[in-house]
Image 1 (cartoon, rainbow, N blue to C red):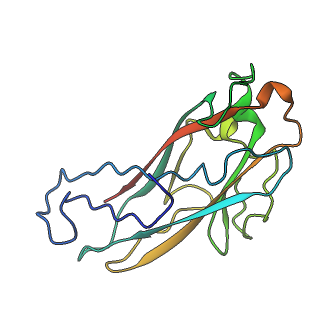
Image 2: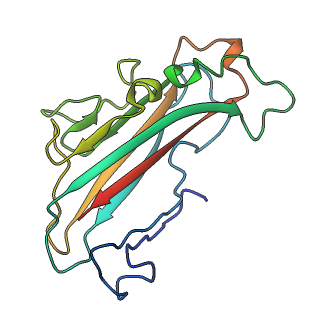
Length: 177
């Protein structure tokens, strides 16, 4: 799926669907790929996800669960695929933030830097859960409220020829209840 606008509702049918305690939805939003063919320490890629509570009740739980990170041949590898599939995720610098705080790597007193560093990588973030009780916390959304989160990725300056032609993949699951 492209980086365009995607609406995902736990009712499965939109904001007017049936609400129950077991509602959930699975939406595919590609936030790690903008332009392939990144160069070490090149231009960071950013994408923004806006979470909106379209319900009538404020959220009591907010969490973002990052799955494992894997690397495989990029869709445009053109015949050359590097051998560093086990280390590649550690060479993709990564941050998640709002306009006022950096969720990952954590900085509650300021926004993420425009250029991520290797203090936060996909490899280091894998398996992490962020929530409204983390430091810094995710925002519990009141009914009708929204919060924008910016995801930034960049190939680290330590990447070598062994990292050429690879792409990273990580599942991210947002929960709100």
